[in-house]
Image (cartoon, rainbow, N blue to C red; front, side, top):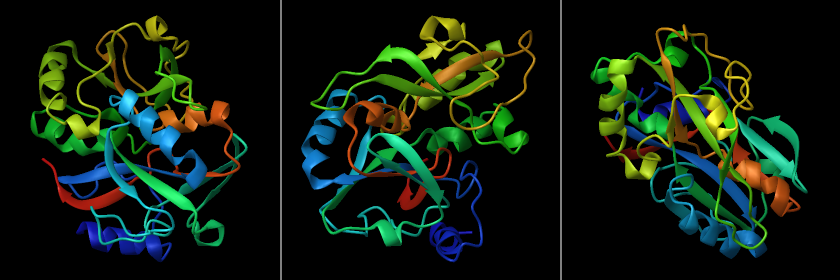
Amino acid sequence: MTPKEQRLRYRMNLDATTTSGLCDDYLQVNLITLPREYAFEFLLFCRRNPKACPLVDILEGGSTQPLVADADIRTDLPKYRIYKNGIFENEVLDVTREWKEEFVTFLIGCSFTFEKALNQAGIRLLHQEQTKVVPMFKTNIPCEKSGRFEGNMVVSMRALKEDEIEKAVEITSKFETSHGGPVHVGNPGDIGVQDIYKPDYGECVKFDENDRIPVFWACGVTPQNVCIHAKPEIMITHAPGHMLITDRVES
């Protein structure tokens, strides 16, 4: 399906699965919607932390159609999360009822965008083969603070064969709007991940640790983590692994 056809399925609540592997060649983005009073501080947070938050688009107050897609951001993602005062409240299929004219929306690049390029290089992605949402983990890697926004980076993990890692770094480093190259390779404990089989977001992916090495990329779920500190009265995000598929070709 084209990105528009896939988005219409989400709008009609016909599909709510992870967007990993869908609409190859098209940029996928994370969504963060905040009250206007938090917009400047969050914009500065993104500028100070471009690895975790590579900005693709910003929608002015109340706007629902981005420049990068013929879409309605209130309905055209498979799943959303709603946080209130820094606490996760609910996961929903659209956010029309919650919408306010004061909301400012940020679209942040997603590592799903470079997965086709990895596949084309012969690099198997186990979360796709196991039909799982890619595992994501909170880390001890600090983000640079901006006003009320502070905290540590969240990363996504893909377990690769040792002889695939150099190629994966080379490929993903070209996708600067989709987090670029990895932030860590190897021992999860070095970045504060205690159990590779218990992700904080997404789903557990099984792999043979004698055969594959965990590789970690910065993740656009990071703002959901720093929201705990900022505690806006409301924040709307994509559900982890459930992105906005744009009309922008990026391959």
